[in-house]
Length: 246
Image 1 (cartoon, rainbow, N blue to C red):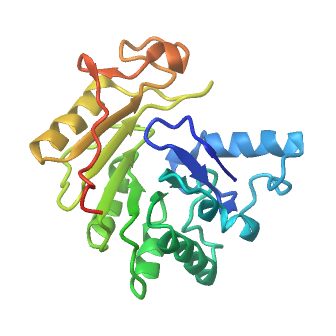
Image 2 (spheres, helix red, strand yellow):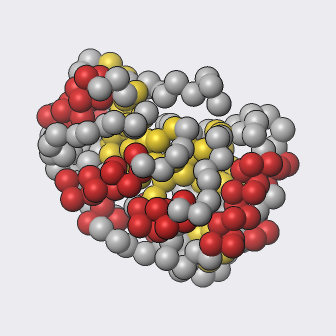
């Protein structure tokens, strides 16, 4: 389904597939899983299978119906490079992306090996922002895969940030999003972890976006996500990559 999004760094979502499965500790409290189960209970179309991976071919042409240039987060309810995603269906997704150059598509994955395999024989359209999740140090290997893929914009989603990431090599990375975890079982994010990422972004001339504190504020107090807000080091960080050349 495609709809206006409350996610701070995008405008709308498009889900040509739904459902996923946990691959790392970062997936432990997956918002999409909770939402999918709720939508199934409500009888929402497309969620009859709950959070089981499901192709949605009837949704493929949805962006083609939208004339206004829009920034879409692709598969907010799944992973476009899921193990059960057929490459021929992925080809159809990218055909739609190429056919709608007035839109921008943000694609994020935790499955860098499948992303790499797909890109060995296929190119990424110019209107795609391609990203990987880096929630802890072991996930930094995904950055090396991403930086070697020929995408016009490459970005990192450092959310939920679960530990100090240490030194980051942001060569060929254009944008970094940082956020804490939300929900009743959220794990806290320490301010110094987020500040270290911000500092390295600015040292390496990479755009920095602070999405949220989540359930735990920068002062270590548990509140609603809205109450904790988005202030880091005295301001909201809404930087975006320079994509004027696209």
